[in-house]
Amino acid sequence: MGLLLGIMLVVLYAQPAEANYPGTPGKIAYSGWDGNDLEIYTINPNGGSRKNVTNNNTDDIQPSYSPSGKNIAYAYDPGTGDTEMYYIKPDGGGRKNVTNNNTDNFYPYWGCKGGCK
Image (cartoon, rainbow, N blue to C red; front, side, top):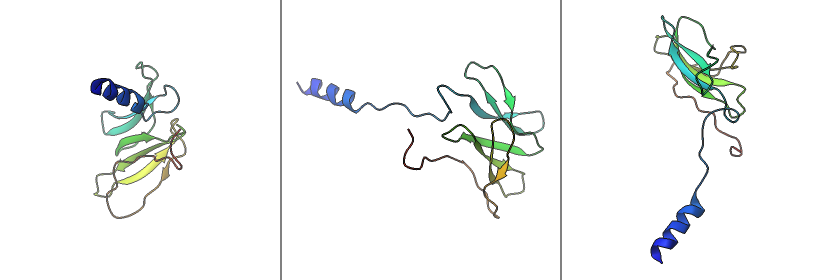
């Protein structure tokens, strides 16, 4: 009886998995080497339709999709000891600096106001 109750509690407590992608399923954002530095790319889960989102002479790292999938936050590391947070649209447009300070900023993560659904 105790084992059955334990199994029932596990089944009742099961929660859906959380992931950081737009849509069902959406593109994956990642940092990749372009031969000179790290840039942000997007790609389909099957490996097709790779797109170069950033293209500059500094490292763009740690991409994170917004919950809507309309922006990608990332860390911009010019190698000067002052890494900043930016966001950009998945097509490469609308780049905007979020932090502007004299310290390193890493690991952007989009929270959800009122909880993600």
